[in-house]
Length: 178
Image (spheres, rainbow, N blue to C red):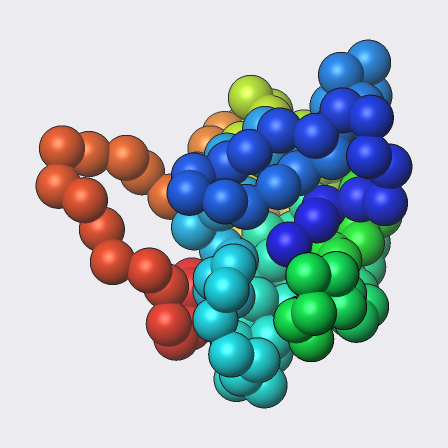
């Protein structure tokens, strides 16, 4: 299984998974992808393993797209399929802003602003850091307390790690990965 088509900078990951790496443009540590690749070198082709590999890599949310292509290798008189995983990384940094206007059942109305920064692949292991800030100002426009104001400021930080390592060796992923 190759992670690119270049053959100069090949590294072996695990038993025999080969990854082609441009050290200057390393987006993700290849060994971090290994648990998400269900197909094993030397095994008979399995459509379910192909689909699960694509699903798991897409759920990491660090690639724009993931594609699997197969080539036939007839060297040594054997008919083998070589799987090539082609990926396109999503932008490492993204910033999203949203202006909102809210109206509540208690007659409060007002504007708000939401900002969200995302750093994908923070430590080159498919981790994501999400920082969010929300600010809102509301005023009661009608009712017995007309003119009453409300402010809200909310800050949050999330670190999403796709897999946590531990002393117990885990089994290969076979189903849905949250």
